[in-house]
Image (cartoon, rainbow, N blue to C red; front, side):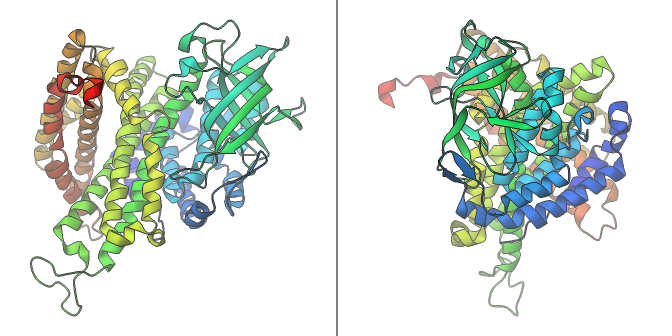
Length: 596
């Protein structure tokens, strides 16, 4: 198994050359005071050392050990507590946090690169800082000043961890039917009672306190999702002087035995009149939680890229080393019994597919993070509102498309290894198992597709889609005289026109057929994602073409050749997807239940 190496060269290319992030940051005063090109580069360099030197070496053995549950207490695998302290001591938990409460205030474009390294090196571990950062985000956006002052500094520092508690045994996607209750105590606190399941790192021994954000219903709450409130429920109560008091009345009933991410603790949490405090307004908890979940959904998409990058690294090293048969054009290494398998077209197909999705996906996640940064830090109201629309549209694509392609890349990497990919020694089977969850949690990918197609595209009558389409069209127009870029722009323009056409088709279908949205949604999201990555590759070609001449490293020339593969072999999938979408829902809905 190849040692994980943080892809710093490509991250710098995406940040500095493709998106010119330092110039964007300097244009926004709220960011300019916290980050510049040198600061960002130093952060990337140090993050790469931690990912490759601290987290990656723990990954395989931690998968074997798993987290351990004993009488309500959870012990993390060997080395996790020490690795967590490394994260804490470096201030990484608060990398994107509000400086007013001890965070570093870094932009999401930069934080996303750190997250990818962490997730690619050790996904089970990476979930702990990820959940804490998300909880901090929601608390910072919706909590009272008192709650923020009391909890955020220690959460940003990592002394305290965070967890989010949504799902119940009977309520996953449909949170409106949750049963967890919150009863007023007569002061500013509430008694929270109920059971939550699938709570990632809901209990562990890495931090001295765990701050849970719990969805629950007040006694007089309206039915459905409009009756959900959000509560802060700490594992240990916090005294007025900031010290820890008695343990709160909830516990971990068990941890799940899972297909993957075995080193992380996936907990059943039982709340028995636990003391909590309202975050935000009563009955507005779902909106407060979605503040966190939108960031987390991009984070899960980044997990997919991280796993795919690790798979690509493993497969590339193996394909260069493993000898098997001769190249179709004749022996390439005549002094050996066979040629390395990288000479075979099908192995190259797999490696190039992985490389296309990994590097295109990294650019796309950075593109989405850019809009998140503009929506958060811009002083221009119109610009900020435009960015918020783009974030709403692109978030489900980032979560679902990047994790779908992430699993594809892990499976392709396993296939490159052949039989060796099926056994523990090479690490590929773990990547497949770990990556699989990314398509399921934080809203399954089918739900993401419904969100994109129904809530974002059809509900807005295409207005949100037009924001993205206009961005792509502007790029095409602005670069129409670029001779090198022209063939790519022609294909990109055709793909965008195809996507625009099916967008209109589904909007019209939905006016007369209730099933139209659900029938089209998954194919539509795939088509959107393929088109979005084509846009990313076109942006990368524009930069790489200017620097490819005399490139002895192969970095820029490799970009151009990978882009050609993407446009010739992967982007054409949008043609068949469009045909399927246009066919409507009848073929899907005609069968009776008995005919299944």
